[in-house]
Length: 145
Image (cartoon, one colour):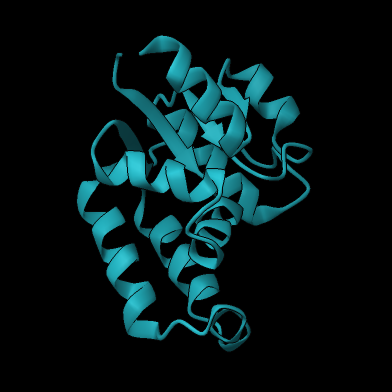
């Protein structure tokens, strides 16, 4: 299978950190094994950490900051850095979603992986970027193997 370039929405990161058995966790595992190429930019990495390390997020899974940081560090280590040269704003009702779109557009992503397709749909179509839920990405990934 060709290396698939993806941008992971924060919702996917949080879902994976909450449950190690779901589709989002499998997407993270593919990225960590370098079977997917996650695209990342500094601000997006900060967003992941900000949300993942909030007390309410830590409380839900009983995982420590250190345990979550290990996963985030590993994901950052395998991610392809993206320089956001152009910002196409506003594209979404949510400014944080615009940040994900900026990385996808500038990084020439094949897909955005998200649990919230509603805010991304119009912009993804405009820039010809696939929009997939984690389970859909896994299904497509398995078909191409």
